Amino acid sequence: MNLSGAWWFAGRAMTAANEAFEADLDLVVALGWAHIESHAYKTLLAEAQAAPHSLKPALQLLASLYGLTRLERSIAHYLAAGVLQGT
Image (tube, rainbow, N blue to C red; front, side, top):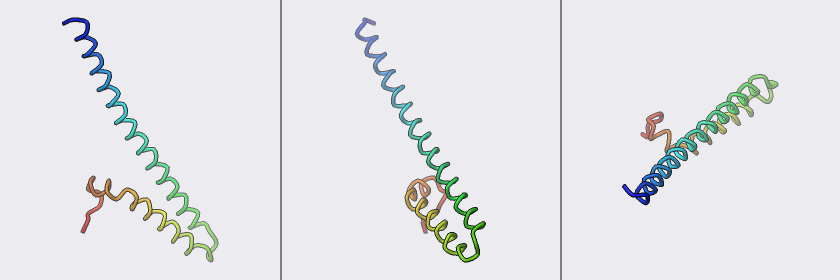
């Protein structure tokens, strides 16, 4: 193998490594967002439970709407993963 062939293989290996890193980075970012959204939802539910009686219905509705917007935003992923069924 000549030097140009070695550079070609090294370039292909670097491209493959970069693509793998990018794919993993996307997964890490998605998992991070999922964790933050889960924490925000749980915190909102806890605050709704601790709120004065007159505010509970509104805050519980707000928490439900927040949860539904998160599901709606990622519905394709949940359907593809089999977490939700489209019937």
